[in-house]
Length: 154
Image (cartoon, rainbow, N blue to C red; front, top):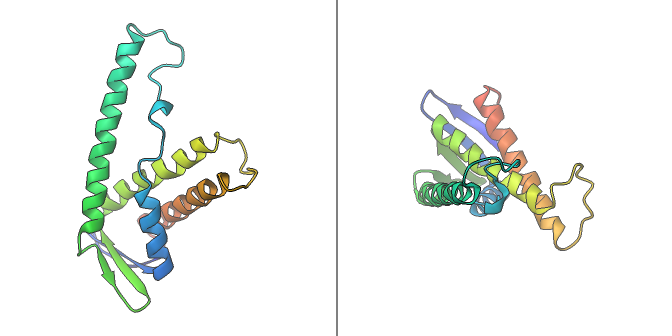
């Protein structure tokens, strides 16, 4: 993935065919952070903790549903991906790149949580863990590429 054009309101990335498929696959996994992962308080010293936690869960569910709809609309937009002989060009505004970074972070962190939140990535790879490790690493790769583009690197 390479930044090939940058203006104040548009960033255009060149992706290989495999990169395009991987990015679409990683984004399709959103949301990935388990709903029960976000706790209002670990200390439990809030008034009506169950009711307040329920409100938080409902708000997060609504936010995730809205993000999922936005993501589907973004990816379905024919102007977003222009196919080339070697892959595709992805065109996003800086705000859309920032938002995609948040989606990728959810997938990366969610994969880590589903792996049991290991301190080190020396995870015992097997049929169950390998896809999650791969997803976490690919989300991190795309985050790094977008962040490098936003910071002015090419």
